[in-house]
Each structure stands twice: as C-alpha cells, then as structure tokens.
Image 1 (tube, rainbow, N blue to C red):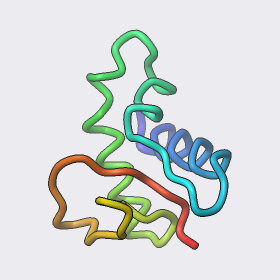
Image 2 (cartoon, rainbow, N blue to C red):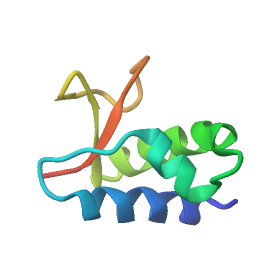
Image 3 (cartoon, rainbow, N blue to C red):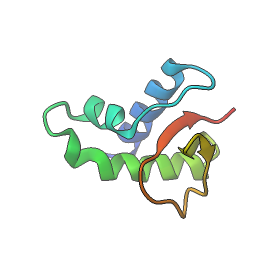
Image 4 (cartoon, one colour):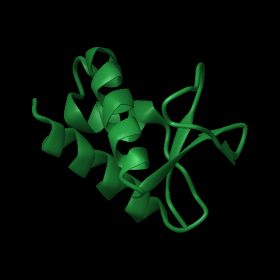
Length: 81
C-alpha cells in the first residue's frame, strides 16, 4: 500500500466528516483494509503526520492540535481550518 493511497483515504474521510469534525485513525485503517485494519494503523499514523506537516490536516489530542512530530497516545485527525 503506497503513501498516496493512505493519504487519500484520510483526506476523503476527514473532508466528508466536515468542518470542525474529526475522524478516528481506525476509520481510515478500516477503509484501507476492512479485514486487517489493525495492521494499517501505523501507516495511517505516518500519513496523518505527513499530511499535518504539509498543512492539510491537524492531529488532535483532547480536541487541541498537537505537534505532529511529537505526540503520543490516542489522537484524531481533522481537516485544517
């Protein structure tokens, strides 16, 4: 699975959710591989970081944008406002 496929899935889901809303990384992973979605979570995380560094999305922890190069734990992804 290439980076463009992962990035496209994240963007498609986040844009469909709408402004001010976020998606769970597992939603993107399930979109990529419904059967083995857990194995796609690291690719989704890498895609979220890539998109955040490119200014396309925000990575959220507890509803607030975090540094995409330095975050841990549970996070969500939202289209950058």
